[in-house]
Length: 369
Image (cartoon, rainbow, N blue to C red; front, side, top):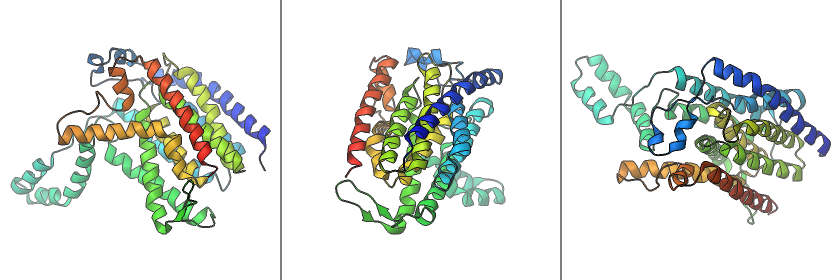
């Protein structure tokens, strides 16, 4: 049974809590100088980029804390335990990354050719053996550089993927073995009903969690952009969970929407703070987990189409630069492409919001089939 009054109460309570947390969090971020720094001077390409220097990051803590507090008190049960667990894991990953990006040191990625040379010519036999044994790990790291990852001072892409894979594995085990679905490997497909993919559901869940987590992270590049798209996405899954009479997931989505309202109030241009990895990684993980909890993971495609476009353009750009030596977009991800075409930041954000609303409606429509 769906208690609409409780859903609205959780939404309002999460929003009020988010506003209450905002001022002390902003003060702490300024106190510890957790603010935006730009190592690569994008102002040579996009003049407005330099205005963001000094803006606090990790503003996503507002959403993280509000969602966790509200759900632990009012909505902690067998349906929400795993979503909240992986939400917390991804938030911790993002928090470490944000802090290291401020206080850490750069860690360059060696070229494979350089490692192969060291295996042959290094004076120490032990070091030659070390480089030989760690060659697969070096290739794994280099692969992400090939896909467009630029190593900075924070947690590197190949390291993030491992933690995200663990979070995805937890969700996969939950979905396949513990959630109590009638057919754990059943993949719903609009209009076709669906197919039973069996144990392949496990890698599918892990891949989806990793993809959506990074897609949301990549979209966090303009004031109000990722928060607005997330509000549309979680709002859509809130409607779908109500239609499915899934009260725990409805309350979870309502708490996220309420907290995002508070965050977005301070993130609308000019932003008082930015989400940071602590928010974007956690919310991306939770978004994908909610879709699996509702047994409608393929609805992520229409509902999160703008997030998918963001990560797709980034991957395409990275591969193109390192294979054919040229860019296919003026800048990746997609929102920067339009910014370089001369669109003001607010115009890009508003139009992304509008398209997100249209895709959200498509997602709700498809959920009936």
